[in-house]
Image (cartoon, rainbow, N blue to C red; front, side, top):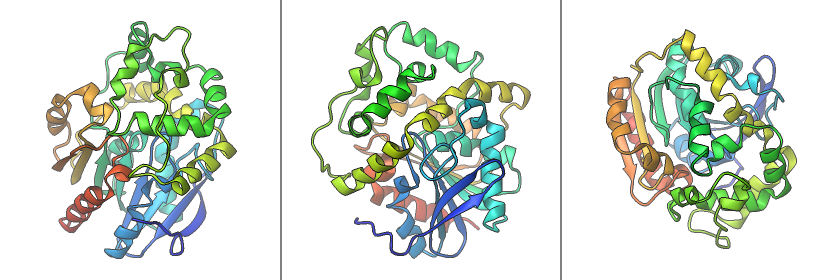
Length: 325
């Protein structure tokens, strides 16, 4: 599907300490779309026109730290207190009482918490890639440090401010192409684990991507990402990783509650998240999400499923939305 921005409305919304950039299309019941790393509102370009044509107000957000939205320097400003306030402030600023929220990657991790942290503002969830999981018993950075003693783990590498920011920012086009390819259905991402942590940056362990275009990413689409990240750098996105322990601490004082709102979950068959967690994570999610109605595993797709398989994702979204009362 080609994407034209002719019918997309862009605006900045003041949510308190920062302003968020949103791209909207259509009118009707609101659906808010929250991306992950390394994403932008543009990561939902295939969903916006389809949702709009079906009678929904599709709203894709540049999340805190990305694109045209505010990019605080401190990782502490990416904790749940701030990111939930972003979503509540966005609803208030757009004049919306409640909405269906869709999340991917870090966006999904945040959206899982919204029914509990922003009660009354969430009608339903459409979650991609990251299943609901119980909170770990130890701080996340301790867990990743132990893993990194055995092999390269990007989450551990991202924790220290400086090295990753500089490495990725120096070659944004190369990094984006390689990470999009490495996490896609076209590559076995767990092969990265063959590399040791010591002496390696992320670009040292990522595979070199084949030349564009790919079946799911054109040169023009890719250029949109490169232009934005060349302008902003990657620190804002990396700060979501650096807030892991802070979010964990918040949840020690506010334990996760079951997710009871109607929920759909969708994941690519070859998504590294699913490969690392195993299919048992989907079974475990059933107990954590009593509102779970549908689970879709998209054959052949990897982590960026809404871009790799937009037809399947859009069909699942529209069917789920049609079933809401």
